[in-house]
Image 1 (cartoon, rainbow, N blue to C red):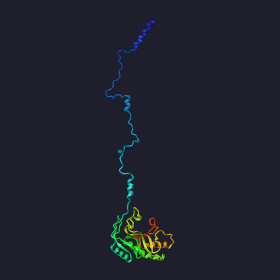
Image 2 (image 1 turned 120 degrees about the horizontal axis):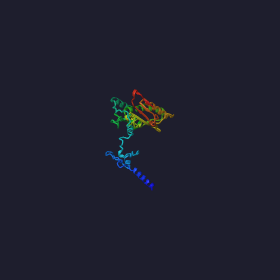
Image 3 (image 1 turned 90 degrees about the vertical axis):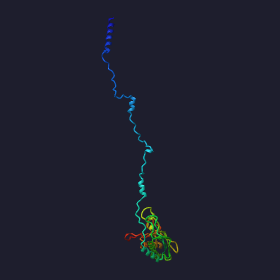
Amino acid sequence: MLQRLIILAASTLLIAAAQPPQDVPVPQPKPQQEDAAPTPAPEEKKKDEQPAQPPAENTVPKPEEKPEPATKPDEPKKEEEKKPEQPPREPVKAENPEELKACLTELKELGAEFKELPPIPGEEEGCGIASPLELTTVIPGIKLEPEGTMRCEAAFALAHWAKNVVVPTAKIALPDKNVTAFGNASTYVCRNRNSAETGKISEHAKGSAVDIATLTFDKGEPLVMKPRTEDGTMEGAFQRTITTAACLFFRTVLSPGSDATHQDHLHLDVLERKGGYLYCR
């Protein structure tokens, strides 16, 4: 019995010792400051701190947002190609009145038949003839077929060549034939040299050139102008002789085969060059 009392008393003392004194203050939770921002809830903090998504790399702007360039990159190049620089061209020159009168007189004395035409202004700068004439007969017995429009100087050179070279050479090379006509391939026409799109203007555009495609005889077939460098016949010798001698009367002679654009005709012109230079091929 005494042991039980002792155990009960000890238990009471232990319980009393475990309880805090009544006058000791118990710690209270720290009050929140009025100016401090409230701590966001975990899910709100995650939402607020979520970084902004960067724009997609391959986003294509709307058509209205993409300005159209004023000019395409290749436009200046095309414009340059369309407008190449042209060599300067002189306007149509008036003939010297005294020289023209003398030329017309001598042309008539050679037996040429022609008629004077009104001035040809030309379709563009550099083209035209101030005092043109239409030649129908080069010298008696030799026609120009079809007739050709040219300056008197060109007609005069053609008549002299026919009289002093073509007729006498034909009598030696082809004694049984007489030349009756020159086949006119081209006289006056407004164009560039070799009919190119750009470059220097042709002497044809000034009425200073004649192209001969054939020589017609009173017998047999016409002599067709073509390359005859290796032609060992009398026709070949005849063509080479008259084309070579043409440079005694004209300032430019381009024989058939002299270049790519002169394969089927003989080109003759009276272009004046510095120092009296002649171009004969």
